[in-house]
Image 1 (cartoon, rainbow, N blue to C red):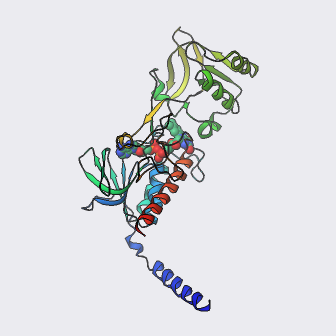
Image 2 (cartoon, helix red, strand yellow; image 1 turned 135 degrees about the horizontal axis):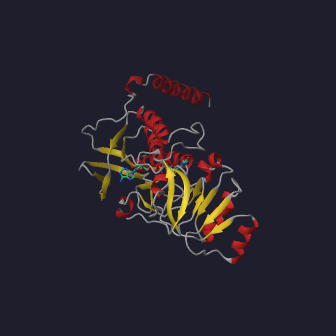
Length: 336
Ligand SMILES: Cc1cc2nc3c(=O)[nH]c(=O)nc-3n(C[C@H](O)[C@H](O)[C@H](O)COP(=O)(O)OP(=O)(O)OC[C@H]3O[C@@H](n4cnc5c(N)ncnc54)[C@H](O)[C@@H]3O)c2cc1C
């Protein structure tokens, strides 16, 4: 026992000494690392926003050779300020991502490629990813942290207001528009549930069904009991100044003065490569994963908005970290 602890002590001292001798100068602070001839990686992460960068950090710290491919189109890019992520509350979305990328760049086994991944194929011992510019990279494992693409409805002014005064989530933006004259754009079960949720932040609330209401009589009565107005008129335009909503203009020529709208948009996967490689989607359109973030195709993992409706930066980061750890574990299990 005594011998064992002595050996253990010596081993730990060697590890400690080696780690103190880490070549700190090797940790280069680069925004975008120029690609060199190495085209083979342990892991390629497609999507270099919050979730992808969190996975890259976990893997970089696990000494893995990682390539992050990113087309720089995160879903929140039009939002002026991001909220509800500890230590970064109220920062610009880009500011958070830039700091994250700077920190991940410290790990010199992680490289970055700015561009769009367009194709993926299964090879004998891994995968090959091709980009729009024709570059080809190979890796043993893939992580898709590619997010989702919101389908903007064909209402004039909607796109300009998205993320500024047309909001997807009260936990991200509800505090900033608390007690304001607020609308829900929705119908049926979803319109009812969203109205109920938002009544926590404001009592000045109208549900716009944009056409005939599909609420049940009971849902209508419940909303009315809580002084939530239901309007069935069809919307023609969102009148705004630089994305800040002024009025909802209806097709019948009338208008309503509204400060903020909440709505949930239809979406599609931002990147089609997982489906192309055979990854199954859920009924709701998310990439199907297990508790270890493995998709239905061996060696392919997914993380962030593309797998869940719990859509927040904090959740994307948390899932990215977990996915990086799970991928590293699988690599160890396969080689140990
Ligand atoms: C309008 C809006 C406002 C929001 N506000 C907040 C907020 O205030 N607080 C909060 O916590 N959350 C907010 N969210 C949610 C938050 O932005 C998301 O949960 C988070 O961005 C998800 O991170 P992600 O990394 O999974 O995906 P994303 O951030 O969407 O990033 C996906 C990345 O993958 C890249 N990509 C996709 N396909 C490819 C490809 N084929 N090749 C290369 N790269 C590719 C994209 O370019 C993008 O950079 C908001 C969302 C929206 C839509």
